[in-house]
Image (tube, rainbow, N blue to C red; front, side):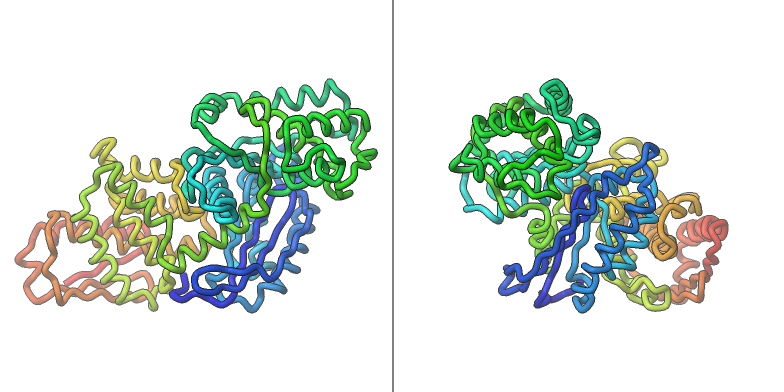
Length: 498
């Protein structure tokens, strides 16, 4: 992460229906949009029955990202945030696609969980509105998922990401392009079933205004306004007029509605069915429209990270409180781990700030599994971190953090790292070694008075140098280091100490 606010920042949203890029100039911690690009890639349509993305779709998506990459080529590292959403969450071969896409784009890509997508959508929408005190219901219908968020000011209070979107719904109920009342009603019922488990919670939150964001809602708004069915936003009556018009047309090819673009037609009816279901389930009478959503949320989140207002820090702090970890012990472990990192980060090629952040978070959270059981607490902690909703964290970051927790003690298994890209495999193995050594040296849970402690590395050989006679005066620590040397040897590392 960069330590200054760059003059230009950008966000790219790899959605299930469209890819969007937004570029902005920064000024005093705010931004002004200077460029936008969009391409209807229809990524979700390329998912085969086995949830692999087909090669033609990947080629089309990579070609789009090459065009985006040309615009982003001169932006400095850390000034561009790129996220993949529902389809890349589902695709079994998403790693293959991301590897190709990152080369085309020239910037790293994070695949985010549905809950994180909802948080970022709300962040973008709330910044685009007046800061009112009332509770807001935000609905974002994407290509493969639909997000429902209730929040106040800039804080989401409840967020859900449901497995339905305009592409998936259109493919399921209108794949032949035919539109009739029976199929439309079946689509609405299917969407109601998705909403049903959370319907009561959202009705009871007491939201005062409903807001629609992103492509489907904007397209519906354009149509109801262009046809004179509404004078302000999307009303329940205007939505019923649209529903009737779709059924009367009878086919996606005949959707000659004013305000509807040709590229939106194939997936429009599925999106309308979802919104009809949302209006029915949640008792919505009027939906305001927001021009801001995920992309703007990404920019605000990126600025927050740069200005050290990182929501990931709040998440880690919340976990520390929730699981009542020993803050003093965590601080001791991180202080020693950071001392090691500062001495060898260049030699081990882990000198990027992301590596240090990961080491710090792992130091603070390495004992959360004790809340479940002391025995094999590293496994319990890893499971928690791998499966929780962690606001601010991308799925890859979450997996890396969970892996460091899993490998911070006992056996250092090679299999724990094998599902990461090669560069992260090596980084994680080395960060794990630093965390393990810091934990071993603080096993007595006390301050380590070792001002002269030095660490050197030569390939996978790690050398610890203690002050003269220190180890002889601390035989338990020496025994712990001997046990650790045996664990590291099985993983290909050689630990020497004197």
